Image (cartoon, rainbow, N blue to C red; front, side):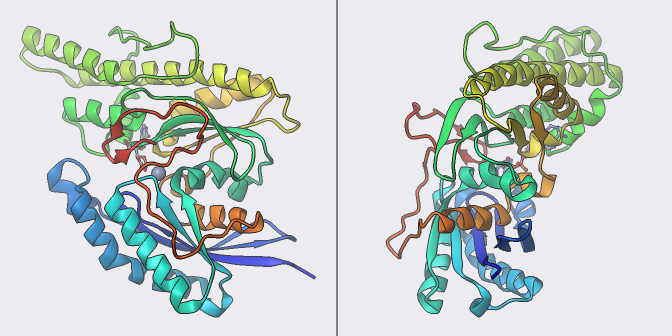
Length: 365
Ligand code: KG4
Ligand code: ZN
């Protein structure tokens, strides 16, 4: 007899209110029956970043609507759902509380089991939903709020090999765009401008490459860019389209070089355990960058490692990844109860030293 599991997922740890229904079966690939994302970009636009209190209030207003839409789109009701999974951290605490309270209410009202999911585990387990990767695989999370290498050994066993010690790469792209008068989010704008540029005209550092290990740093690149820009302004009274393109190309090439070299080291470490089906996945908004993605794909393929980049709408914040991580936990017998707490910080790898700092979108964990 076919075994299936259908889980409702809720996500509200940053500035996206999301609900989704995902179905697992032992006969076929997982199916995303619905994935609703209500983003809050417009309400934070005037503040230059996410305002936690405003985000939390918006989550509370929107979550039940998102849940209703997710059930409707999936053409299911609560009698078809096996459990409710919710992001219980890490993230902006008001938003996380809003999501967990909603999930607890639904669980209490329906009698369905409640599963607390780590938001980062949601990102890290996504390639198993999209590409059925088997454990262990290596994943690089690169977005506006995340930057870390993880070896995923099981649905609960994550080993962090390294991460940023300051800005996440997406943050660096966004700041670069701001410094050059380009639109937000900065990544796509910088990538577009870089297409016409010469990466070698301006010198950009490759931070931390001289140090062993997989930790990274991106804040110095933005400072280097600021200096180059100010020198051009002092010399010529402003910057031309050509200057802007060359600065973007130089910056992007530096980010790509750092990510490639650190990925090479992370892959070396990962391959030491001789995984039977070696795979390297990238996730997060920065993985949308063609130059970076191509560099990482080439690196992996040259080492005989399968390269996986889930579709962008599943790399950025969404609730399908939370529902999927809930499925993984439920299958492993990991279910919570109404005492589930919301956690602002929740490192995936409890053995490694926790990372410092906070991204523009909240704690980096
Ligand atoms: O994963 P994401 O949507 O949200 C979180 O940060 O959680 O990532 C957004 C980040 C932004 O900083 C954006 O500038 C960056 O990803 N990004 C890119 C590109 N597209 C989005 N960075 C570089 N190149 C791109 N094409
Ligand atoms: Zn995220």
